[in-house]
Length: 334
Ligand SMILES: CC(C)(COP(=O)(O)OP(=O)(O)OC[C@H]1O[C@@H](n2cnc3c(N)ncnc32)[C@H](O)[C@@H]1OP(=O)(O)O)[C@@H](O)C(=O)NCCC(=O)NCCS
Image (tube, rainbow, N blue to C red; front, side):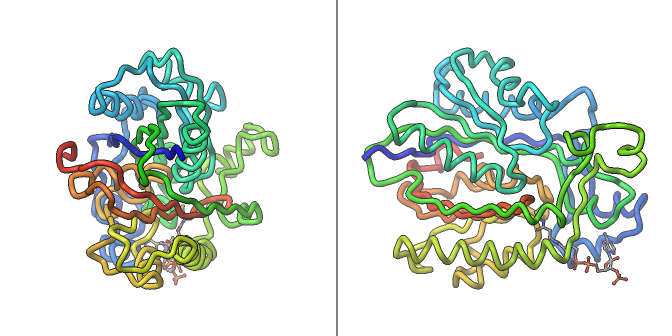
């Protein structure tokens, strides 16, 4: 059986750091509130408005190619999980491919918010498993600062900009993407959305005046769904694959709120030393958090490690992917 193995990982973050203390200078909040409620201390913001999501993605995809020693022309398919595309169309995937010279690739954007990367990873793995493709790039990236209302303290403090990418290649070994369980429930649209600019609310003065081009989130409602959904689906994929807590080397959880991550790891019986975390430095980068975690922790990853990657986000969308790591990260990690 052919499986899809992750053979390289890379990330990219804007240089500009916005700390909680910086935020408290222009919105009614405090470092104490943000840290205790979310675990976030600072986030990155792409404040160069000439740079869009594809520009931030390009260095990550080029780093992937460099690490694996391949040319962008070898990429067959590039899937980009994002809810902050450069524009409505063409897709950010197409723009990234054009910028890096991936002229033999096709691709598309995948709008599953914080689950965008795991939905893309699962989708991309199918093109490898069928034998159709040899090199699939999955990007997860968002410039959330471009869709935040920086006068709304309930949303602007939790998000940040950045993301990363992985390369999927075929393997005949017992490793790679072993299983996934994915879910979606469009009824969650009432609790978490960005309504303006689509066919339901085309952009006009009214949509701008009503701030419909910004993220709208009912934090508590989303929190309740997220904490149950992420914990349940993570436990479900472990059970389905006969994995006990001691078999898991790493939980790779979407970074929306440290309290949601703690709830998930507790339910799985996994100690904090096995939980990848970077929310304190980057906030919630939506589709970007999981590839950024893999990039940050790559050095510690060993061939054969069992990873449970779990996410929850707008849609609602949620799921878990079981990955058996396919290479020794100590040679490649930063
Ligand atoms: C957004 C979130 C951090 C808010 O935390 P919370 O504990 O639920 O906070 P609440 O919304 O209940 O607000 C509690 C109080 O803090 C206040 N508050 C909200 N944001 C604040 C801020 N940035 N600074 C200070 N006070 C704030 C509220 O006004 C409220 O005050 P009140 O009690 O006087 O009315 C949390 O709900 C959350 O993480 N939600 C899920 C996010 C998520 O998973 N999203 C999915 C992926 S995008």
